[in-house]
Length: 105
Length: 167
Image (cartoon, rainbow over all chains, first blue to last red):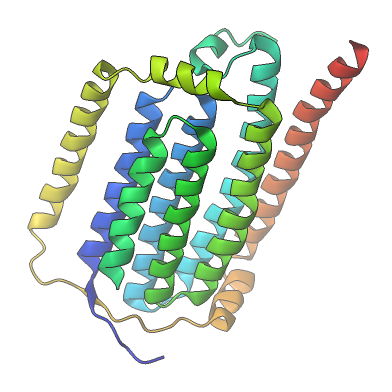
């Protein structure tokens, strides 16, 4: 593939920061567990974008390798997190994350 | 092209975070992921773009959707969401995020000569070689992590099923 575009690295990093902050903002304002997990996904994607951008800047495959690790991490996190969501709604009949503050089984 | 995809990613992720209906938010999340996959492709990482679509949009979002449907969130949950999402709660997180953005932005001010990304493709073959030689330990650790997640998710789900059977 020819080099068809010239994007400054800073712009990609800025996009990554904006997405990360949107995710953090979402975690802060929501009380529903599902939306908190969704915001976490957005934050992980922002981190992955930063890795890919850095890998593309130096033409090394390391960025994509780290992206795959992030992908595996996100899959594991979502599986366990959604299991916890199901348990939470089963026990408290709500998705309010503040209700789960006691942590006793 | 990059800036269009970036604008779509930012606006749809804002919408995803602020929706009241969970399935609408998930659809906006899919839009964000597709825009990010476009960006990955433009940055010369076609394999990462394909993985983003297949695993994120294909598997993780479907998992979310399964749970949303299993919990059967209807109109009552939308009403409860709007009760939880009062306008006053937005102010402090917005200020904090704005301050963080300002700090990040200031740290970029010193860098005058912008490093250009030319979008030269890093082929999947090179990625695979690096993954299974340099990062072999990482691959094994990821396998252990996934096994742990599998056992954990099975444990959480099974207890739920057992209790239901006893009722």
